[in-house]
Image (cartoon, rainbow, N blue to C red; front, side):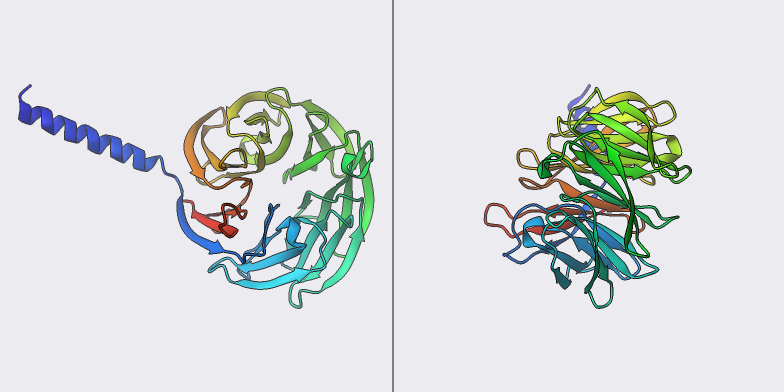
Length: 339
């Protein structure tokens, strides 16, 4: 091969590699919202109000709920009176915000116009993860467990309209984490971290109907669900996403990620998994679903130490990531655009 032809081939190879590399970057950083210097410590889960352009953030040690305009990062309101905020749910029809307060053991009900706390619904101490059933408007709230010296935990069922607790479902295990609700049935999947298993709960019967052991990872804390393909993704702090078939209850495979995950999300449009992991310098590990049985790495977003909480919003095709204060840099919320 002569020198000119060899040079042409090398240029072609470089361009091909560059194009392939560009395709591997599935998300782009769109905005960064800098937060005030007095917001320190870790964040927990986000909430979203798409209609009114509001993002709800929970800096735990700030003892308040932050309400931001997700279009520009402006803080619209700081809601005080929440001792330790964890999870947020929102009802557009009532314009109400629901926040679990772990220190007080209640669900705070906040009016979306005045931002006043209009009710506090008692559950158990250490109220944490929470999900809302869009069809029944019932809240499912995790509380109790070893942090409050209980040998078991509870999944409380709360009527979000009346602001009243209906019942507690007792779960054998002193540490429960997040859950996923199935839309086509009454099943709820709950991470029982203490037992390293998934509890399958019938929301109509309000009882545990199946238990699935998690053997391909340890400390199962986060969860995402591809209901169309019957794939449940379980994020484990050991550094794995365990993929379950919800039709059989069987583990299929484990995807390697960084350690110390807390939030996991799946986008059914782009087929991306977002795993926010706080180990080391912090990262969001990305996987793309090729088909329900095959997954490929889609890269990694570097974040910051202790960064392990994010929220994908399918209506906006945006991924919000909470980065705690570190190295004398203020805490911030990064907004990534997902194609």
